[in-house]
Structure formats: C-alpha cells, structure tokens
Amino acid sequence: MEFHVSDEHVYLANERGELLANADFREIAPGVFNIYHTVVLSELRGQGIASKLVAKTVEEIHRRGGKVTATCTYAKAWLERHPQE
Image 1 (cartoon, rainbow, N blue to C red):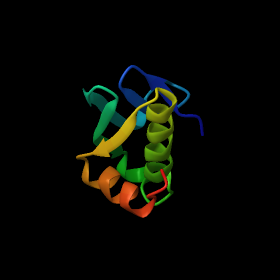
Image 2 (image 1 turned 135 degrees about the horizontal axis):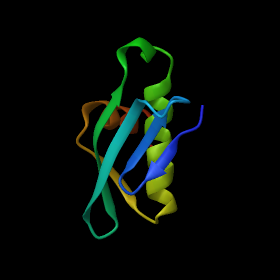
Image 3 (image 1 turned 45 degrees about the horizontal axis):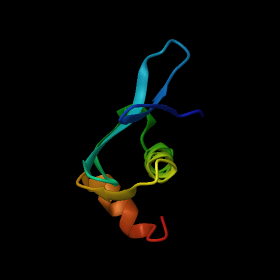
Image 4 (image 1 turned 45 degrees about the vertical axis):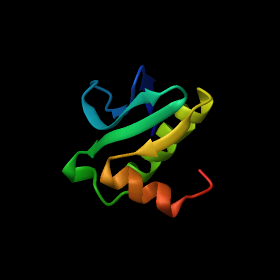
C-alpha cells in the first residue's frame, strides 16, 4: 500500500487511479497544519487504512517542519492515541 502526497493531500489510489482514501490538511498559521478531513471508502474500513493515512499525513507535515493539529474527528482521536506523533 503506497500513499501519495500532493500539496495539501495524502491519498491512496488503486491501479486505475481511483481514489480509495484521502486526508486533507492546510497550513492555518505559520508552521501549523490542520488535518481537517479524512475519508476511506466504506468497503475498505476496518483494515487500518485510516490510521496509516493519518500517520503518513503527520509524517508529511513533520517533513515540512510543521506542527500538527486536527479538526477532523478521526484525526483528532488518532493524535490523542499517539501523543508522541
């Protein structure tokens, strides 16, 4: 499973390029990025994809030298469960 990054999105697509999961984030203050939306196709839920998606998004924000916050309820809960992230 390979996640892709573009501007303010981290996403997973199938071999036909169809979107399977994505997380959207934006810089809301200098160096502070908000994860505001995540979605995983219903048929893929329960496989840990959402967790991996948020982890990859956090990794990308840190790669950019940013701090992470979230208004997306899933991402917010994920960050609470992974405080070292």
